[in-house]
Image 1 (cartoon, rainbow, N blue to C red):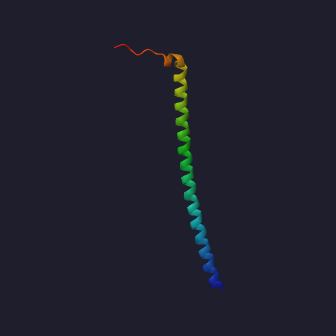
Image 2 (cartoon, rainbow, N blue to C red):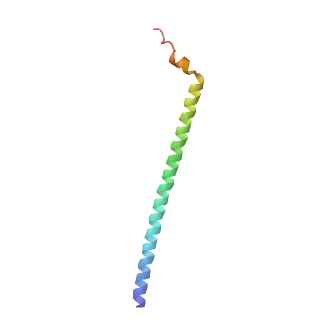
Image 3 (cartoon, helix red, strand yellow):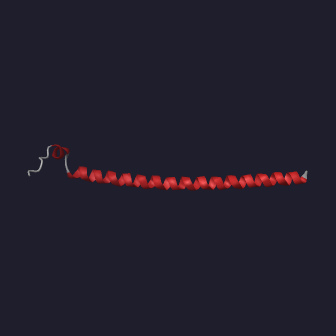
Amino acid sequence: MRKEQDITLATLLEAMQNLNAKIDRMENRLVEQVVEVKEDVTTVKEEIAQLKQHKDQYSVKEILFRQPAES
C-alpha cells in the first residue's frame, strides 16, 4: 500500500510540475503579447499625433479648395 501511495504521489508531483511548466510558458506568451500590444498602441499614438500636427497646419477649407499646381 505504501508503495502504491509513493507511486501516486510521484505521479501527482510530475503532473503538477508539468502543469507549472505549461503555466510558465503561457505566462511568457502573454507577456510577449502585452509587449506587442503596447508597441502597437505607441505606434498608433505617434501616427495620431502626426495626423493632428498635419491637421493643425492646414485648415479644412485650405485642403478642400487648394488649387492644383500649374505645370
